[in-house]
Length: 147
Image (cartoon, rainbow, N blue to C red; front, side):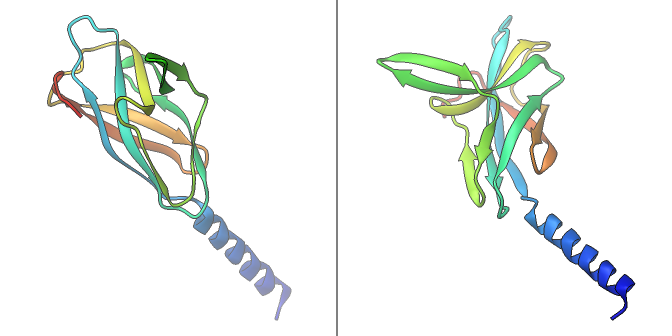
């Protein structure tokens, strides 16, 4: 076999492995409650499914409708809610991370530039370590929606 053919085949094999190792991220059920008049912040919840064979990390979130979007975790200790910003969220291979009201992770939007209006959808951009940028639409539910 000629050297150039061997180099081409080796490069193709490496390229195929690199593509196969990149996880497939699916985002679903992205939602938030409508905001009350003058409300400066809102929480967003969503489901992230890592269909890949390699772990990934959610590193950043942004949206044009808020001054900032942060990853937060919430916990209850002695009937006191504690909310903390986290720098990233790991999503193991072949797993699903579900952000729900009342526990665990959520996205905190602060400095809302517009009201979140029931029935509308607003953009959210998620940046992952391996999968890159994923754009989603947040469905805005009624302010009184129970989850």
